[in-house]
Length: 157
Image 1 (spheres, one colour):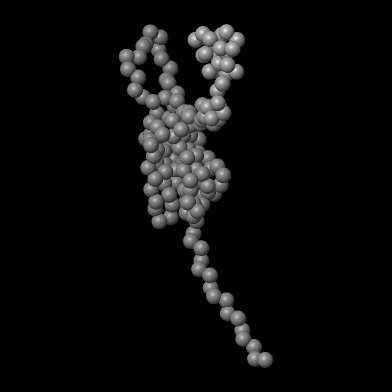
Image 2: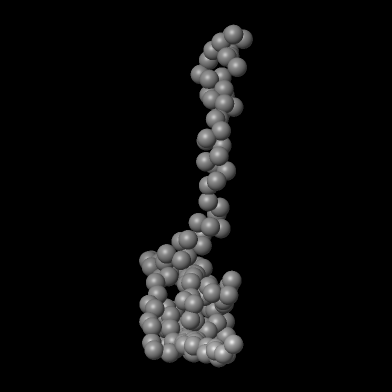
């Protein structure tokens, strides 16, 4: 609708008209924007470095977890093949009168997800946190035995 016809040709009404005339592309873009939860999880994943090692009979996922108790760490398997390591590092209790001069240690939620290979045995997973280093070990399934050829008896007719 053209506001000049109604005699409302002022900057205020132009801004109002522009706000009301948001085109479908802009509406779709804001509708498809990532959620706060997605952004939070993406940041948590990006700030949690990990090493992954493959051994002949297992995989090891190694993550530094300084100052965390085992109750602060959660290890799960989602969708039968996604290893999820998550938790939360909380700020320690402060004594009265103390103030921070510098805060560099990371606090808050952390998370990492790893898609496990097909030969990972999700029923044989262990996790140990020692000296601030979490090691999650996922055993490998034994390799499938090669199929023996089937012999078919040939009869004389």
